Figure 1 (cartoon, rainbow, N blue to C red):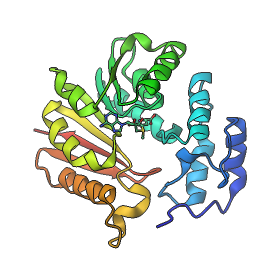
Figure 2 (spheres, rainbow, N blue to C red; figure 1 turned 135 degrees about the horizontal axis):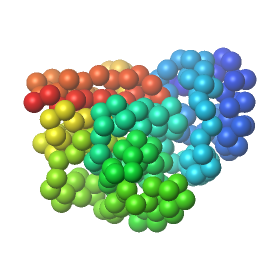
Figure 3 (cartoon, rainbow, N blue to C red; figure 1 turned 90 degrees about the vertical axis):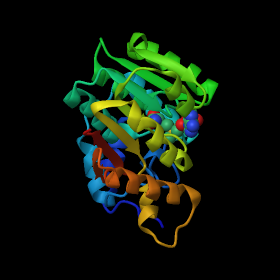
Figure 4 (cartoon, rainbow, N blue to C red; figure 1 turned 120 degrees about the vertical axis):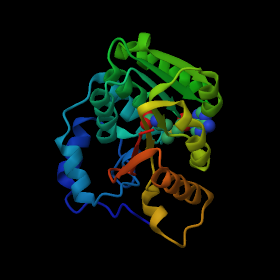
Length: 244
Ligand SMILES: C[S@@+](CC[C@H](N)C(=O)[O-])C[C@H]1O[C@@H](n2cnc3c(N)ncnc32)[C@H](O)[C@@H]1O
């Protein structure tokens, strides 16, 4: 299912993208803008509203576009930062951090006395992220872990205010089972890509990743301990609060 039909009003988005000096794909949008489930012109409008990011975030957006790293991008990045601010979160565990773009949004959201746990299976990603964290002025509030995010979560004994899930999609049901007990009451499980370019709504799509996300979403909504909503922005963000 192609959920991104191309923009009916390209001018605004292209102006925004030029401003950010992002490399263009053959679709004339960076890869992290692909898969958006919002109608093209509406999504363009959302991006056109955004204030410019600082030098480091802008550079990571360009790097992610060039290397096709599927970062959350600035519309979702702002949601992450806002969720941290709204809940007063001080301890965030991030599963699947790549080169640290979403990590920086969390780190700024938790403030100077907060702590964000970066995790990724790729050591080179972690090295690059470490350099970005230093330049972004948030290195002292980020702990970097390299390896399987689910194992790294099990090694941490504390409870978290927020767990952010952006690992391989086949692992989502396992993330559900491991992460809920690790959240404090009132804590959030936040998950990217839960609409998976709209594939979750296509009954003919039985890819393992799609099936895993469907199962994950079902678990989120059927758990009596959670109150869940999905924000249909970009590729879908699930926000589940642990009530009991
Ligand atoms: C979608 S990217 C993360 C993007 C990042 N959250 C952002 O928005 O800036 C997914 C990353 O998760 C990592 N990954 C996938 N499964 C993982 C796992 N089980 N443990 C650790 N890292 C994992 C991959 O190496 C990849 O860099």
